[in-house]
Length: 457
Image 1 (cartoon, rainbow, N blue to C red):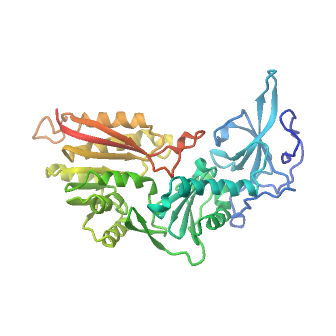
Image 2: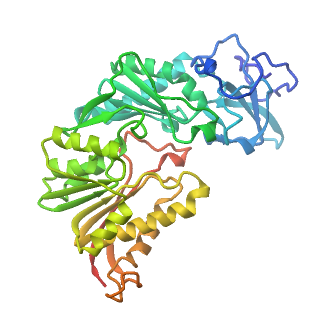
Image 3: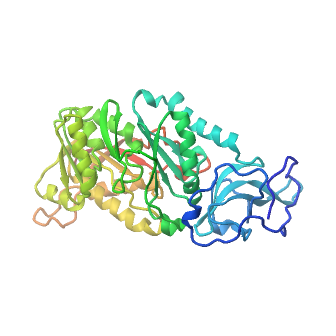
């Protein structure tokens, strides 16, 4: 078992590999009794060690990069991470490169929490959380425009595998990592002190059972509300915090895009596809003063909330429960078009295995959506699939436009289609409270492309 770094330099010393482990052994299935681990390591206790095949600066260390790990290292443990680092004289030395959260059952075996020899102690964690809060409150000054924003954006804020949003008096956390799930309660308690919030919920991300080897129902603090009402640029939104809600409960990342869309909507017709709880649709009506707004989503639960949100703001929006594919085809057959169309589907590509199928779905969705935009109208198309790069998404949209015109054979709707002229006027992403980590490009995940759909070629 590798000992914790001491005050002497580790830059040239080799690490003994045969020292006996002192932590409890066993790496079986996660057990409820281990649902929590302390955020602050005990200074007197040795840490298990993980040895990498080579030094990496990316905070997510995949299993194939791990050479060996102490047998006593359990899922969720804080581990000391070592790697062979080349020296100036050409030799290689095994060095302590930092500390991370370990899970041998996950493809991401180690999530780095601190680089260097110093332990992630209480002072370190407190500073990381204060730094996250300062960005949102002091630099972005979000409290002036909303009480719904992201406080912790995983790797970008030094807490890999953990997202935390603030909704008024409630902090809503989503854990993608077993190690972070075990420490989320203590992290939230520390954030309550910084923010003055009182309640919290903790949920797991999608597919954590297959990816991390654990699952859990939503954990709620005592007296935490099942719903909360927040405001965004003066528009009120009710957020559900129950099992039926998606992610943390509300998509704060689209805040600035919702306001930007509203500037295109005055006296115009708007179609919001995959509208969830009505964010774009309601802001188009309330901030944008749109003439007509329709929101479409397949899920009944968020549509119920969307209708409540429209009532909260005393705006008239028509919400339709439907699969957007047949809905768009019906609109196209009926010759109905809109001045502004928003397409913001859920995540269609969660892994490289889904890349081809998800890309085809994005293509088909956009080809259909483009047909519903009036000549000279606006299409805002979004993807939250981080595996689909901005360049690839732009090429996909250009390809979709080449097949978005009317059928060459007007008597056969399935015939080859004429191209549709399209001009990209802007590209945006997530709001600034979702920063992009310089050593983790995956934290840039949301692509929003703004297009003017001109007449047919």
